Length: 88
Image (cartoon, rainbow, N blue to C red; front, side, top):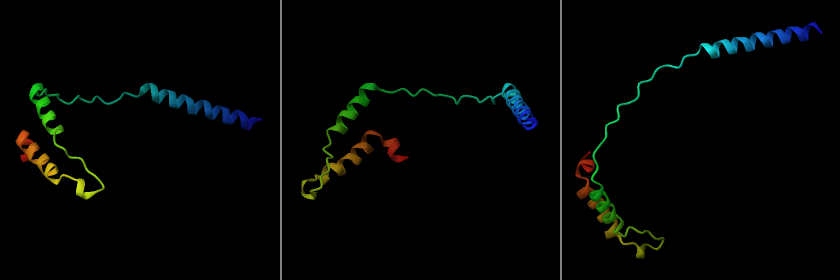
């Protein structure tokens, strides 16, 4: 019977330590990263997307049905629309 009281006492001490450490915990202060807004031309972006969607880059298991010229046109189109991204 005395060992139950010892185990119960140790459990209470353990829970008291956990509670004390939880209450004393202070999370570190982290500065939020600086957010820089980039202006976006919505009309130009929509036009570029529409032009990219028009590229018929549809693949097929049958190689004879694949238009390889369309696949080669797409990277050139991206380079033309976004030269700074392409250069990087």
